[in-house]
Length: 287
Image (cartoon, rainbow, N blue to C red; front, side):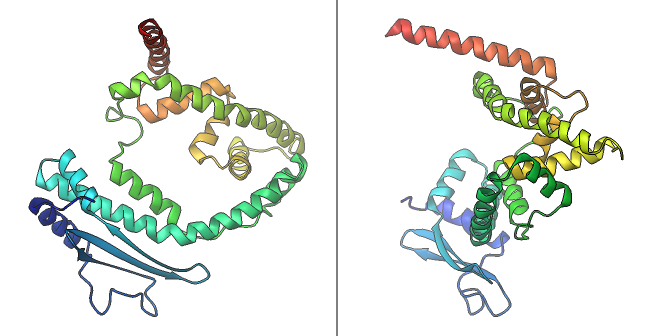
């Protein structure tokens, strides 16, 4: 366990204050009748920990304590300026609190989805299409947790926005870019196969009434999300009018997440794969 330094404790206390997390008092030690969650901090030996309590209908109660010394020392090591370290610790606290808040709801939701998915897998493709078209798939438990989860994760990592000059690859990311491409292509192959089959069936069932391309995209995203569980932005890549291959989907996904052009990303993937081959040969020669 990390022992808090004088500077670390001073900056952590600032972050706790900015996060509106107080020492234990009459109102924050237990969730009240109407308050679902509470959080406070206290000292434990040479460290400081936060204690989080939550109570939700149908999902039970949660009480969790997390020591902060290791996070503080990590923040100080990476951010020598006090202001940057405090800001990072504020985001760490928001991330921890957001994740703990979502934990019981997400677990309960996961049990429901497990039951739903195991039954759904046994249905024929035709049955799945009928369910999706008729919108008879049971709605999952309503919660803002996934969006809040994703947002706090992005804030903690200081993720750059999509596109633009801010999204650039570090050297180690360039070195492994071919592995990223291979992994996305591997994931895309079964989705692409399902896309072609599903689109053919959709066209057949809508041949008389006709349809707009946006209607097909909405249908595909809903159907594929239930089937594969992938995010909307990824699934929409398959529903472009030019019907891209799994390889092309992988390149477009990398383009969206790096901000580089399609041709430049392809050249980086080729170079990354070539350099990796040279590295393997050097390792073999040295053995």
